[in-house]
Length: 132
Image (cartoon, rainbow, N blue to C red):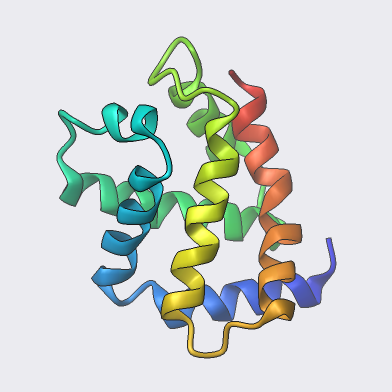
């Protein structure tokens, strides 16, 4: 992992995560990406879900900055077929929703920032997805 990527991502997330609308918009994008995704959230407390998302993205960012993958492995287990049954193909939709949300909320978003995000968090996403 290029330390420059993790710095770019850390700063980008910092510019976005203090605005609750960031997390609202993420779920608007994510749920509009698929009827199946939308159906997963029908009985969900979205305020709590946004809090969990805030922490989950931070865990991906911290893993990119060198922290152990313990929390990501636990997240993978909770999202596996034995937990919430989040199918592996949904992670691409999740990532694209995140990129759209970052593009909307990070005033410094650029192709460089997007590439850094993708490179930085893909290994963590693979850990979560791999637990399926």
